[in-house]
Length: 279
Image (tube, rainbow, N blue to C red; front, side, top):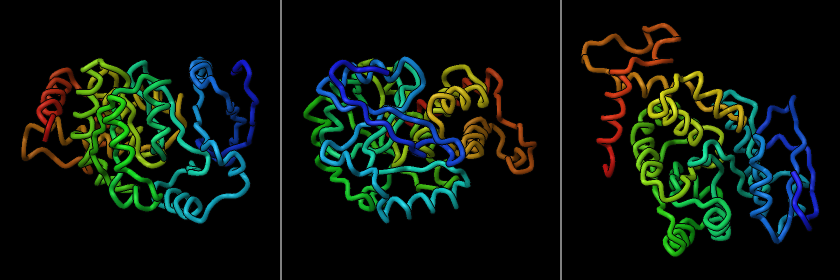
């Protein structure tokens, strides 16, 4: 990854990798971020937008970051970490879909609009998430309006598979609508972009892109290492495909149940998801 006139800053980061598999990630500071973005997506890499005045923030981690990562590892049972001090980070999953962490300031919105052609932002955070990190969400929403980005919210509780399962249908309905509008890319984010946001993207790919769950899961995680709750996606799939009130519960079915779906089930799911638009 090269950018003309840039100074590279390279660090060993567990940002989106297990601690035992640290990878070198190159982040460039330049007056030409468009070139950086283009280069960074030639291969599966994470694009990091460092706070302009916090280049030295890699020296140690904040208490909030440490607390968040401890909770994530305990409740999600995966080794991935989020480092707020590194700024917004994201990954292009398909030509129409980006998955990432929370925008932290209005300049992040300008970057997404100008450099990534983002026309829709789907925010999965609860108000408590936003408050925890001290994000000025009203200013971010206002900036979205000013630059022509449609900002949508479908809150789900962090680290909670049941909340994610219940929220997936409505979240995917918003994402599917945004992508079908075709006016620009959709940016899906939660806090870290490691759980809720990739789960919504995977569910969309599973339900609307003619993939089975394993294919969709691998397609996303091969580009953005993360650990979304697979069972929550299966559960939401089961809920949407259920056409018999007496159908045996998901917990009594084999682990592979609803890893794939029949054509009639996919059509039923699509119809039910689309019917949730605007609700």
